[in-house]
Length: 111
Length: 113
Image (cartoon, rainbow over all chains, first blue to last red; front, side):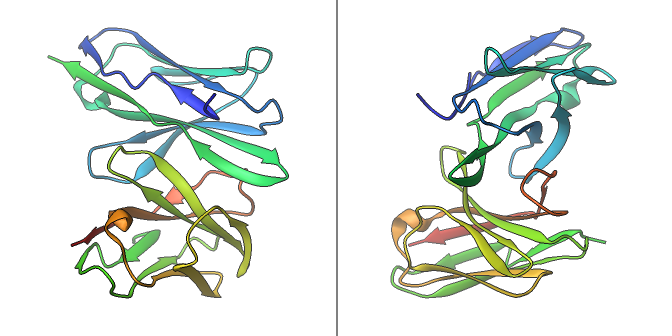
């Protein structure tokens, strides 16, 4: 099993749609969780941190489920500018500590 | 002002050559990282330094040698370049530890011919 797994997509959705991504992680000792966004030929940028209590930032909502070891990202009212690759990131402690990126989920929002 | 900068942006070179990539951050962060993103877009951590000390060294060929002259700089030197080294190399930094948000540089696109 991969340390961090995401559905690679692509997800093709119309503008205004709601879309959800999930990410699973294998190490129950993982400490912190993030969603990053990466545009084509650009660097990853932090979208939001993920907490057990869940957090919301405008149209974006992130949730962490420690019992099932997954995190989710919900995007409401999709915009064309949301088209990007969304990377799930897990920081874990396993001997030392390590940052692990998922392979990313590609989203295309169409007019 | 660019928070995390890398030079060069593009690097095309022949197999067997030695090359360096430089990274600087002006955020006052203590921790810096090097990542490699291959053709399948998979981003993998290579090294991490905290206050100039190596704290993460993933399974990377010893042809790759990071150097941190001060906590604002983390350079990557690659000896005897191979075709498989072709990738995008990203530098990143975070405030204190790996738990914090990481800020990435624009990447260095390396092509080995």
